[in-house]
Image 1: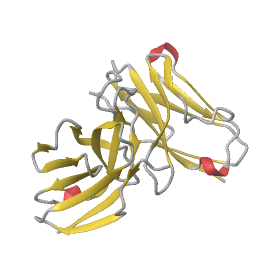
Image 2: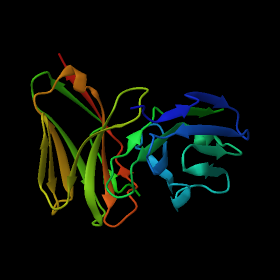
Image 3: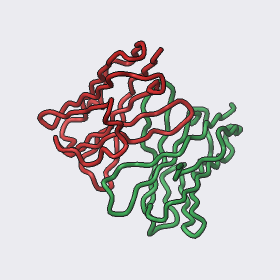
Length: 114
Length: 113
């Protein structure tokens, strides 16, 4: 079974530029999560989708971050404009459902904002 | 506010000995706890979990203990192997919540051959 796929793996941009990350979850997984992991910290949830609806986006900085999950499968996370403090690893995870289901993580996208 | 805390950033253990990783939490609404393992350049991988109705869960070499009164859990690895060298994250989720996880800051375990 294929795992969670993410691209790109690495991205370097300058502040005020925009960037987008892509995630393809495990087939059949209804729930998709985006986490931000800043160096030296644990992952922090940014947004959670159930199929193509948003379950929780309370920690998403909505003035610059946006995410969508069209057709309830793939998802993109966008940052516009990026700030220095957005430098982090962005992890995508998926699970079968949203109640005590194991979350499977992708390899992450490492973003460096200069 | 860090609701899940791992106060030891690193731990070194000899191969064959026991590794004990600790985690504390502050939110009394947490009722499900997990440990994830992370290798460099990979995403976290689920290791073991425990519900708040239990105080111990065992899976092979890995055992998680939960002390609800102390809001503390620990992961025991016996015997430790060099392949166990990784960063271990403790995570928790809220009763009735939407399965979003609150992670600790991680403990880097090094198992010395």
